[in-house]
Image (cartoon, rainbow, N blue to C red; front, side):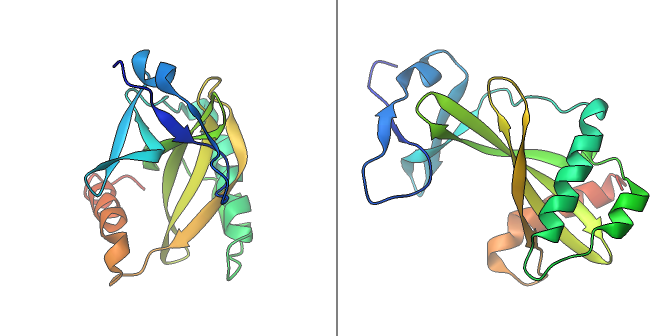
Length: 164
């Protein structure tokens, strides 16, 4: 790859917050994400996402509880605190992006069945250290949403594999 790869970083702003991210693609860590037939200047895909281990589960459950409690409308995380489920098998890599120049973050989804609902909780990890970054977002999955077809498919696959 000889062309320069200019990528956005950080939160969206009207300024051109871009930097030369070519080294991240040349070293084989990432490949370009194609969105609507064009290479994305925002997201990329990790060639080998970092694995999550069972020892990461406590931190993942805590991440899920915090995300649920900051959701709108708020979801009570008390039952999750008592159940403390094994979430590692319910995690899927989503995409990667730069928080700052040369500071990539990898984003993962937790596919959580909780209190009769299905939620997708997105959290970030430092791409270089693997550290889970506090915070995250949560989306309630609706049965008829056209934008959530892929997430419903993941739930279906997890359910058929009987991963609870």
